[in-house]
Image 1 (cartoon, helix red, strand yellow):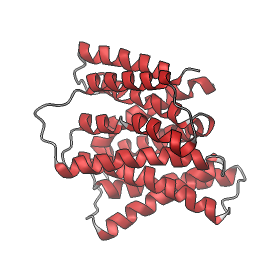
Image 2 (cartoon, rainbow, N blue to C red):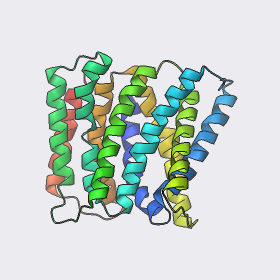
Image 3 (cartoon, one colour):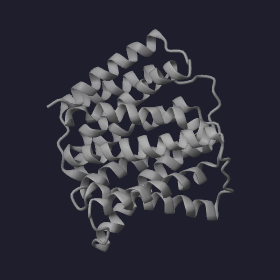
Length: 282
């Protein structure tokens, strides 16, 4: 079962791109994320109580997990949702965020003491090359500067969140840690709403379906698997699987949204798969 976790994660995480657009078409991005992580935090709280795991823990551990949540659920998801909501092409946003394994490999050595070997670098470069082929560069699309800036912030946030989570992953159980991370993400978006945004949510059927997908399958499912993988593997190896996200998302868009999938996309997917295999195999 453990060996299949990365594949389950890829499928669930990739599916989030299919439901992001319906959410931001029916809500302000920050209101949607505050709504989402309120229920995610509540869910992990109930689950922790069910498992008889105390949420009353060391203040230092609480603040560390909240910081991780602010980086991941706040700056990362907030940056991606906001950039797409103001017209950033989803493909370019995903491509920028796909640089995460490269940054993580660069930083995991000095920050975590992990050794990143030549084989992993070759895998990372192949993975990024394949991701570029799958996504393309959307030449001719208008890229809002604010959206580009927000996506770069998201990239930096998820990189540092991954490294930070690796440093603190053994301090708390997964459910308690996830509770405080979701709480931190919810608090972040509430503060953004209070000081910067004009929140609204149209509670349409489409919104509820898309939001339910992101709460249950992405936040409860994929994110928990990601935290488990970070805890039990090196940070550099774990994030290499992110290179499969753009290709898988493109395939899902072809399957469910009738978007085109070219031969170049298929070649890119193959190159990415080979790159991830090289980067993550023992």
